[in-house]
Every structure is written in C-alpha cells, then in structure tokens.
Length: 194
Image 1 (cartoon, one colour):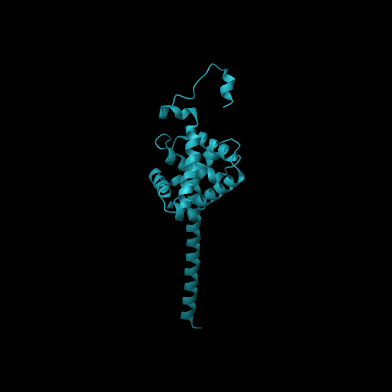
Image 2: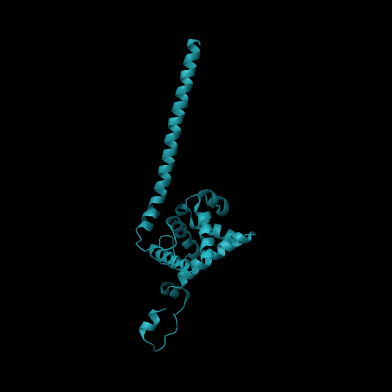
C-alpha cells in the first residue's frame, strides 16, 4: 500500500470516528431534551400520593394532557387541582368496571402511550405534555368523526370516563347551572354515603 493510500484510509477512519462521536452526542442530547420535556409533568404526577389502583404513570400522563382538551374551557391546561380530581375519579371508576372493559381501556391507553402508534392514530407527534390544546382537540374531533368504528369507540370511552369524572363532582355543578341533588330533611350522614 502506498503512503498516500495509507493517509486516505487513516483520514477515512478519523472521519467515521468523528461522525460516530458527533452522532452519539446528538442522540444523547436528544434523549436528554426528551427526558427534560417530561420532567415537569412527571414530577407533578409523582408528587400525588393518591394510591392509584388502575392507572400507571404513562396513562396518567396521557390523561393529564387530554383532560383539558375534553373539558376546555371549564378546565384549563394549568388547572392542576381539577385535573387531579378528575384523574382520581377516572382511576376509581375504571377500577369498578368489569375486567373485560378494563382490558379494553388498557389496550387503548397503551396504543396512545406508545410514541409511534400515538403519532399514527392520533396525529400527535410531540409528547402529550407538549401538545397544544388545539392539536389535542383536533385529535379528539378526528376520532369522534372517524369512519373507523374503533376510533369512534375509543373517543366515546374516553369521553364518558372524563366527562363523568368531572361533572360528577360538586366543584363543576355551578358552571352548568346544576344546583345539586334535591335536599330532603334527612340526616347529613345519608348524603355522605353518595
């Protein structure tokens, strides 16, 4: 091998090594930025000491993002108190459902929690906590009006558990003009059971 050819091989090796190093750094930086983008929502959700029986952290992140999309403007994206109430009610409601329904909801949540399938079926290419309220509402609207029965069913399932979990709470009644259940001359303990 000639000296000139040897120099070309060494130069090619250096170029490959530099490219690999820069590529590795770029990937590591991308992963770090992605982890930082989740940190805020994850920390808020992990600070909740409620003993969730059904919802795992990924499912809570998903619901944390889409609750305001269903309930806007009654619940704003930054309204953590209302989102926690709804999230806990959803967990309790799902825990009381038959196992077959729980399994179906788990499949729906898994589909929407996995990055690639979420992008393909929901059109949300960012993390849930970075999606705008408009893009979330567009995703829900597209599912509601989809020609695929499976997507319409997914929309209705999410709609029922989120809407029911919010409007079942006294904090939401004023916004819809509901005075609450009729009061009879019964002891207060009677109403606490409901």
